[in-house]
Length: 151
Length: 161
View 1 (cartoon, helix red, strand yellow):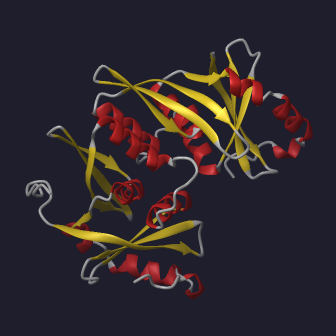
View 2 (cartoon, one colour; view 1 turned 60 degrees about the vertical axis):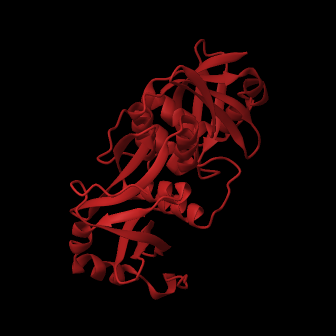
């Protein structure tokens, strides 16, 4: 079972000096926070805001590579989240065959946003990474922690 | 190796990545490229994440999860596309431009890229890195002076032979 998710936002986590990509399902019943590094967050942030960088960023190069060879991204799936190791798969269609490519969720999401491909999360991930963790984190957050994005 | 297209690239000089230095004054890295006979040095400033991507590839570090350039390499492998070579093609107002040449079943395609992505990819694909003679000629003294001035002696890493 997989659930389609949307990227709801990007939050700076001052405690871990990292960013949280917040994914939510269509009816807002499930939330999936994914901790990513600064450069990974920036790749996602640029795509979220539809910013075109003066020079192609890494995921723009990825996208133009796939387009050049007529490979199409069908979907990306967040498949597993462990403490330090996150897993995702990118599903490609190329010359009538489907390929599944192993990826970090941050790359998969950055690419999905640029190619308008749907993002899914496996049931296993949603169960494991319940929104409790994020809610707890949000409760501890102080007002001054906001607005620290793009420091 | 296929012959270099004379029309598109009049004169190419093969370069290797010698080291990635920390620029002590800013949160940037300096990728030092050298010609095979070590007579030509081309320093290119890149962001810290970009520099780290190059460093990981230089040191052949295998990360637990594929990094972004490993993913591009993996796409290429899945699609049967070969990464042929990367070229530092131009420099305009201190910004370097690069291209990555791909080949698949006799089809050759060249994509515009930042030098940092091109180099990170070349090191992972074991393909040659070139700069046009024109770029090397226009590597002005100002750039080199700025480079030397910016470098703090303490930040210079031991030269890797």
